[in-house]
Image (cartoon, rainbow, N blue to C red; front, side, top):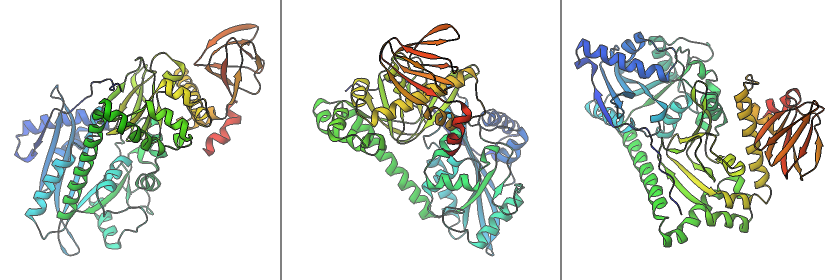
Length: 508
């Protein structure tokens, strides 16, 4: 099997921990300026005052900050930890607050966890009998998900009430730290002024998530995109810290094993023995491919391969040639395309999603750049294998539906139409379309459609006394008098007017 084309990825080349209290005033000023620069790229509404009083010189007993730098020695991320002394349940208690941020291109590598564990364990061992709690006001579901992923006991969490005294302690601290209340009935949700910079595609990704922690966070804090935070607390014990370290070690071992298998599979003998089993196991976990019968699935398995990639890896770029479809077995990828204001994210895809079908079905070049968001395992299916499998329903229809919806979404974004619709609504609108398979020479009047998606083949669009030649993939805006004539075998999707599609779109 061919190895995946190597792509450059942004990486942290140096990390250093600093203690602001030991720095000179000039050094702290320079640190505040550097942190403000990176903070402003991650959060909207960043101010130097917040950086100084909230990160560099807070009212804490001890503060340390881990700084991440790239090859140009620019700070691209940070993790600040603050230790404060309070009383809870009548005894001295340490409260640990933190602030973390990383530019998008460098995210997903758990660059902070090992360092943070070391800092916390050192403080934990220095005060063995003192209660210690971590506290954060999480303004994004990804941060809350990290806590749920690594910490067994935390509040609030799904399907378990917060103990009354812990609830009162969290509220007391939030009030003390001047986190403004929004709703008296939801005292753990606090107003924020610096929301995470996030695209529509990223918001849709999190809203579609089936992870219980993410669904709980969004239900509790639906306006998180405005910067509102869910105040969360968790006990920090030596056993909890060692448990996290153990989980991280197991995850790294699993990723190393997957990466090793991906490399070993290129050896002819191992390829014949191991690769088909690995591909079959991953595809059978995806409903779309699990529906294939044994013979059809086997034909895909024989040519497909498993690809294990680190976070931040560019799989391909907009404009690259390509004839492979990818299925996300585990992890997530970001789909980015060039816009007038630069490269922007148009989608984020998680487990079970597929991408690359446009180049496979329409030929030509990749229409977007795809990068891994976190360590990700993919199944790569060559174009010939996919096209053969698509001869059988329901796989073929399902992939054509995804293809048409993405072409339609690309068109609406490019022409700036219907900006009031979210991406899920635009996809639902396209799915309301009526598909027609046309033989060469067949003329089909347009009935109750606003757009015709030409998914494959060539057509003539007759409207207003003129003829327009259209070659797939393309979207054409039409009128009730339009007639589509196939000049080759063609596949078209007739998308209804928005007012007819909206009820279904809203229900989706």
